[in-house]
Length: 452
Image (cartoon, rainbow, N blue to C red; front, side, top):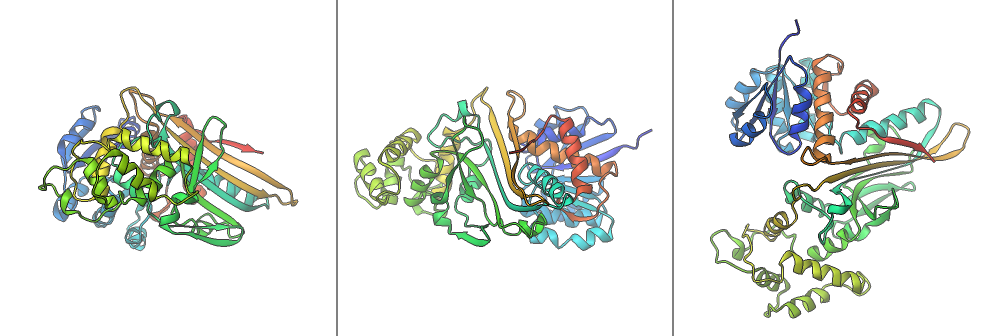
């Protein structure tokens, strides 16, 4: 008889469903879904016969210890800043942990303790990070095993509306908090290009975007994401002259964001007039304030926005399209804003209201690695690994599937003793990656590999 396994899932957000479904296929698995808002946990748990719900405040050390002590493995899908609290408690009670988040310095500090306690703390096992690591290293290891070199590694990933659903000025929709999406647009970037380190200041990130062709039907722009340079070491490609990891968006997105940034709508400083208890204020009055003009007529607002854009920075046609987008969002209207203390959060409230997925609309995930290879005999080739997934309304989104399923697979492989490596881990080794890839492909999540 198979021993019962008790699994704790912290968080019940949008990627949790596919992970839960996968884990509960095995009859010995029992799952507790716990989050701060018990109603959210209950809504997910009631969809499955061997799932129950509890309320938990992970900042309450005693409560966290108590709930973790009752389980065999913990999945943490809560914000990454709370993972160290979870890992600390899990090590105390000798429980494995799985997260889909990047390993932070605070998480890495538990590496020695995890090894000492014979525990696997598996991280970065969603889509990006996750599936991207698996298939990057699959090709890199194949090339190295055959005596070849990686001259260039370029990787771009995008979570987007399917083309027919990209029906708004940004060509983007929010299935969860828009704040994180917008804050990421203010990061600086760093990468290797032709043997040199290139750094892009946060104010220039959107201007650095370039067209990127995967399939002719998609009009993508790409821009680098944070610091790609450590991946020369992480992926064991010291020979690579170019290493870039970045983001894909539809064309039009970056110019629109550029204007939002220029006029100050991504500012996260508190504003007196946007406090919850301040008087109601319309969007046209907010825009006038950020532009420092006294008139709030649409004509004057449009003129003032145009004056912030440098000559030849954005084409006239594109500026007109962006201004129509501002109007579509209601930024020139008498509509009262949802006051959220800062311009960024006030804008987010409007974006989330206007740019949600409607019933029946589907999302899309696209990921491509492009490798410039030098074979053992000196021949140069280009290899690509491409993942294209669509959501299946009314079922899970493509993003939920491609994050949740790898997470669920990692959980099961740890419980089954297939993943034996200990410590605070990322999917950077064949002994971890190959079994996960095999299970992913059984789920129909397949990356198309081509040699061009």
